[in-house]
Length: 592
Image (cartoon, rainbow, N blue to C red; front, side, top):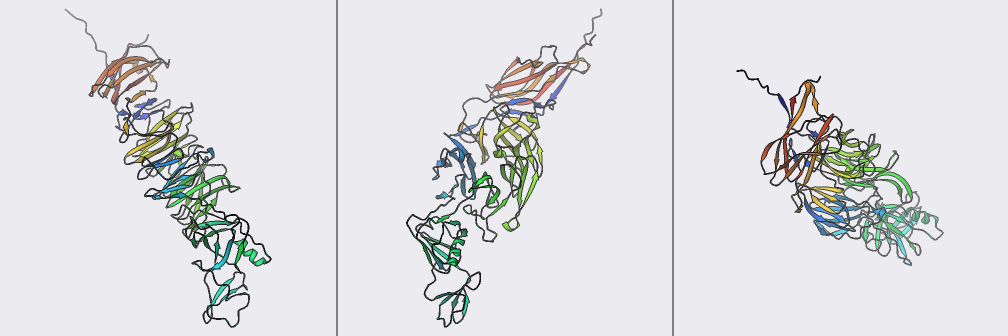
């Protein structure tokens, strides 16, 4: 008796065991996903759900965050350090004074545009960069020729003339007016030139808050008399000077006057003031800033740098290596961001970059590069990762290492805007606004070139500290993204991963008959396996998986159905690791 021979239908599993993250392009690579939420590549080459975050703090009016030895943030009008309030209060909430920028320089933490600072190692050392002074109304202001210590030269025993005095006594002075630059001599058997001349300015409180070597802008000095030479000398003092000596009620500056003078009326100003800046950064023990727009009543397009190691002085021009510096910029349009890159300050506009080279003001040189710069409103996305700069440009995320290069094509064609970014362990964290209006938190693994989307977090700032990445959200929540600090978020992490379109029928009449998943679901975690045909918008659930903490292979049959293409979606909550996914192809009959 003969029995019919039953032929087995050959099948071929196409395994994917390396998952390359998010890729929204039409021809995405195998192992990538067209959409995802709360996924991470921390367990590469696996695809995993992210860890639970830690909730560190809840702020009422979040305005900024930075990491030094401890975490610092601004809540409303007050600065906090290590979770505790600092003496810095009264920060302006006026729209013209927002957004806030926080910059660290050594132990000092500074807040701009308010120009306030505090020493995080000694909280009694705090104040404002700007020190503004006007002499009290009705109070006289005195001007006298003096030595470096502020001791006035005696007017008796001093001759002011263009000819050498005859028969001088020991210790007499002669102010030689014969030359354009007056020279002071003292008699000790012969006339010996006094190396430098100084003017002491006496006024109530004029020296309070100043130190020797601070620069001050003097104004309002005027002369009411008939001596044209003295008038010219006093008018010359209306400029920026370096303070040589100081006490509460006087300052000493370099200068010369033929005779002492008292100004009885008018207001004399002695201001130490930082420029208003659009962006401020620290580089090589100096603060650098830039400004496009109005500055002290003038329209400017400039880059500034403070004195070496001295953030209080921005107009110090003594001809030394420690001087301040500024330069006019030739490109048009506002600045959009600033950052330090490999030891040089970089200032971005939308279509170019200005980079300053050099170590001291005398050899500073600016180089301008025409390139895709930082998108307006995206200055906070400028972050250095392993010596390479990343930022959000007009055409997506750019990688800058001398020349910009796009690294955000996998995020699709939708334009991203605004945003903030941070860096830790070679990963670039980016929170940005989608073209549709929503927000997304992306993580870019710079070493593998893989993108992952977490959730719709609208972050104002990121800060890495002690192996943890902190994120300050617009709603005021401060998160520890790796869950190593704060209180663990109570709800289970919900996640999903959606493949790109896959052709249903393959060459030689093979078709997809089932899926294999090698997956680990933590205890009580769940996963829904869904299928969508021909992009009809309807997700059909084909399997429901419940975790027991073990790694299993799940065979998921697909009911054959004629279609042009299909998509697969995994979604669930709780911990998940996807080790592998296979499409099993089965040979079908030939078409007639």
